[in-house]
Image 1 (cartoon, one colour):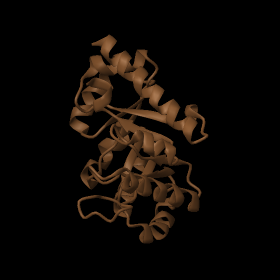
Image 2: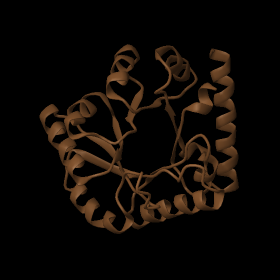
Image 3: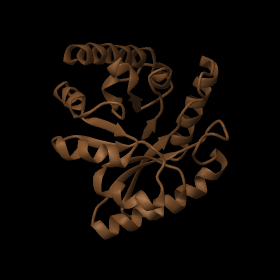
Image 4: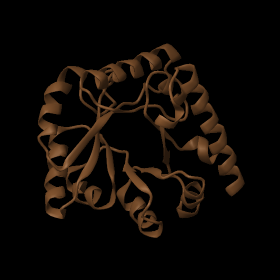
Length: 219
């Protein structure tokens, strides 16, 4: 298992480096967030020994035992939309909330941060393509939402996040990522979280600073 994960990670890092080179970018400026929702503590521990420190989970109840069992040098990302009633647990357990999709949720996180005397890094999710099945702000509502979110003093607004349409052709995926990159530029936000196992190379070519990869690490 260790050898398999190490091999997969080497392949992914190589592809990340190559994609960055094609775009004239520094590969060291791109963070791999390992999505570990399908694996346990042992696999995450292997990733940690290989230098991966950013770990993404999408269920609080499944993540908390892993968080408690592993060293505190891991940076845990909550990568799913947040329900208001779960805001307290997200603030208590995670360093980053990477799919804030409503002003209401930002305010709930702010309230829980105040109660726990904590701060939280966040990424705002944008529904670039307007798909009904996707969460996130429409691009034309983003500016007003960011004004309100920036008023939440305990939240550090680091950037934007999006997901490309499932099984879309490469030109559609590329356009989605290109549009998010432009929005991040317009709003002077550094982080652009986009790209997963099937499309992270395109995402890097179009400006991703974070890619979220799970399946390819553990196949």
